[in-house]
Image (tube, rainbow, N blue to C red):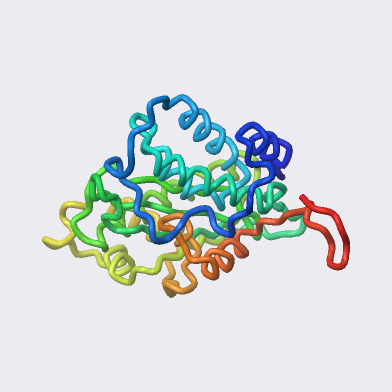
Length: 275
């Protein structure tokens, strides 16, 4: 499933059809803030561009984090925000035909990865939640979003992301049941924070967890019912990392390769043609 035609029309409309491609959607050294750069006199072009990028994320989870970051500044965009948006366009130029591949021969087992970037927003010090879920080998759900409250520790931020992902996976299980698909095996959820996993498995609340007690009850209930199985994954293999922070090229390519994204318009080895 691809939006290649839409992507090419977007590049043509913004005069980026013949630009130099970028290898990643965001530069790792830049931290966007509402106070950086000079405010744009006309914000219409920026808002229209971000709206079109949001629509493109339907089949392009690789630009999900960058678009989420840029959408925070719709009320007062600056020239630096526009430059960052142009970087996303240059990345799209590298592979406008990239899209999701849904295999006909796959299991119906739900599997998810969840992560957070603690206090990463320089303006509000809120954390970023990132997750995605697979049905077999097919990516069916993903999100990159700023958390609604400020977390006082990295463990709290991770646990809030864990609770959000647990709710998403429960909804997907209900949806599968409505479609007549009943799988008795629990959905698997991977988290790279051992402290958050310990909180989920510990039946005793203490001062450290009282302020997130509702989230604790939610996740623990799913574990006790056998709806979810919570497993630890190393930070190196935390695939949801691509939805919480900008990545260097090597890491970005590795993480994106695991999302089952394909460019069916890429030329075959030894063949000619372009995008």
